[in-house]
Image 1 (cartoon, rainbow, N blue to C red):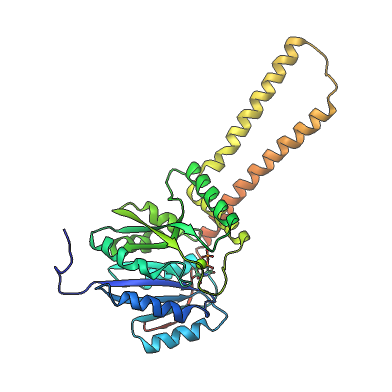
Image 2: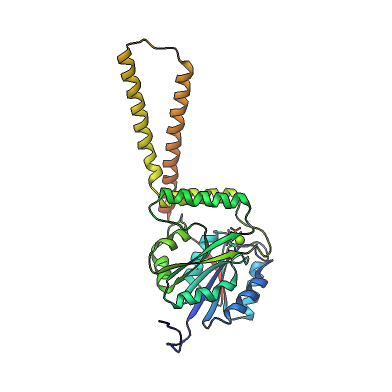
Length: 318
Ligand code: UDP
Ligand code: MG
């Protein structure tokens, strides 16, 4: 049941691209993407979200916007992060389908026709799953796999392994994301995988970054992983209960043993010190975990904006 050709009006695809210091690839990205967009049978708009770049990215983007009316630019007042950029792009999009992708051509534009086909078949969430990540080193690939295993074990929702920030959603899903997922600390691709609707995945082979360098350091990724776990799972909070139970049972066993054998205290200085250190370690760890949750509560409570738009091109500022 193809919807194709049923309507005279062409449908619109919004391509959301987050840009942070990508001067080296923008022109190439634009050329390659537009070439593909010309052949999909849909109208298209390219929404570039400039996430506070400090190089000449913004100048290149305004140049593109002057040349081509399909190019729209949302420029942040400073760096707010990749996720904020994608959220802004979705906020400003007006397409029937919205596709988020990176500016560095790691998400190959050749995938777009396949995505369009799925949208036409009526799928509302299309997750692109990478089969290979050429540019990421072994460590990044391993940590990424470990992260997905951990988060799947901890939370009640399921995350696709290797899901990337490369996904497409229908207008309906975009509206849900716009209205209901406005958390300050968030994991957009997690939400996308868990809003329900008719979903599918497409495999793709990630290309190597066309130029420039990755903006994610291991430290940033670690922060990101902690936030995600805290956002999607309450299990770490329960760690305290289990640790308490364990310590209690241990104490009880020692008590019973001492009572039954009626022996005086055996000398075991090391045992005691090790035990105390061990117990305090667990205790402080749990306090730290609670701290993580409180810090996120605090951030949410302050209700600061997810992003601040300084200027736009070819778009009405909201
Ligand atoms: N990006 C962004 N804000 C940031 C960091 C990155 O908008 O603070 C953009 C970046 O320009 C790129 C995408 O997010 O289009 C993915 O970043 P990157 O390629 O550095 O990450 P990687 O592919 O190495 O995970
Ligand atoms: Mg990249």
